[in-house]
Amino acid sequence: MSKPFMMLGNNVPLTVTSRRQNFAGYCKELADRIFNHLNLNYEIHLVKDGLYGAIDPATNTWNGMVGEVLRGEADIIIAPLTMTISRAKYIDFTEPFMNFGLSLMLRKPGKTKPGMFSFLSPLTNSVWLCTAAATVVVALALTLIAHISPKERTRPDVPLDLSLGNSLWFSFASFVHEGIDIFPISASTRVFAFVWRYFCLVIMAYYTANLAAALSDPSAFVPTMQAGFDRVRSSPYAFVVESKMNEFINHRQPCDTMMVGGTFGSKAYSIGVSSKRADMRIFKEHITDAILRLREEQILAKMYKEWWIEKGECHAAKDGPTCEPLALVNLSGVFYILIAGLVLAILIGVSMFMWRLKRYKRLQRSYRRLAVGNPLRPQAEGN
Image 1 (cartoon, rainbow, N blue to C red):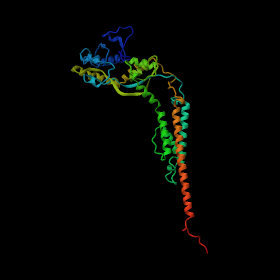
Image 2: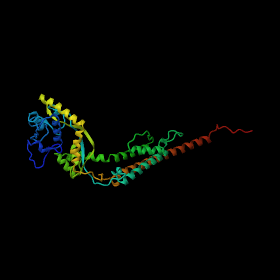
Image 3: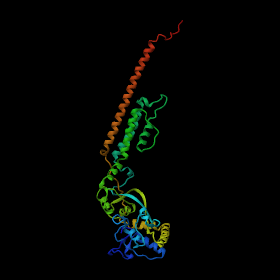
Image 4: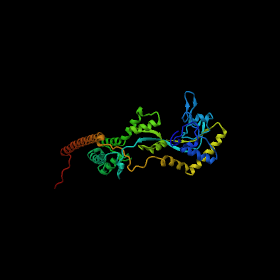
């Protein structure tokens, strides 16, 4: 049995054939509504091995609920049974009664009072201020380097692409990964633009790199779902679990877990029936009609709200959870790289400017000597 789908009442002994009045849960209520709609009675039979159903490699036969249906020990399966291709080859599935996906469960971090600028909380104020200052400094540096670099100005009468306004846009757009049509031309501006984009990449991918390192750890796997819940509560561990179970655990004591992000890998829970019996194939159509009717009348949504939310043990906290912010010392290396890139770009720009200035003076002296020593220069007109 799996909460909240099927649960046994208090002080009731667990047997394979317990009376249905002794059970409660989402699937119990679903069965009551379906069979009331069909005007039929039913009995609850607990699966003997406690499994949902898979091919046993030792015997090459199906175990769990699927195996009991195939052997005729049960007629239908009303449980959080996932629809899979392998199971669909041996049993029939009705219309799904619940859709779900995979999700990440994390332990709730320390709670603080969220303010007007709580969206800035992943980083400390010093990091945000330094990043904003770096954006402005990069724009000023690009403008300065472009003015002293000869190759940035293709024609004297055409303004520079890297003006102060364009440089500010280039700096900000690079940080938010926005497409831009401003391209540095000289080597010095290209070097600095590359370093700035590398700086932005490191800042934006910092958390992703940590998560990838954690997921590649061989010790990240757990033998059971409960072991995964316990590990999330006791250590900084991300557990991949079905979204419905994730939401249920998050609403139960000690209320210290949460689901991060959305779901991925869409799946569904469905009722399974035998595909070998003609009467069960007809019965499957009646069950599907009942499920569709329950969905259209919003009864399935109300049942989910009741068993997951209303019967939850956690009240909405006044203080929202926040992540521990990164201090400036944790990211100081990235700023050192940015400063080194700025110094390198300025040195390249100054050296190219000095080389161009020296070359210009040499050509100017050559033109002056040519003008003074030219014997064919026309004489000034006199009387």
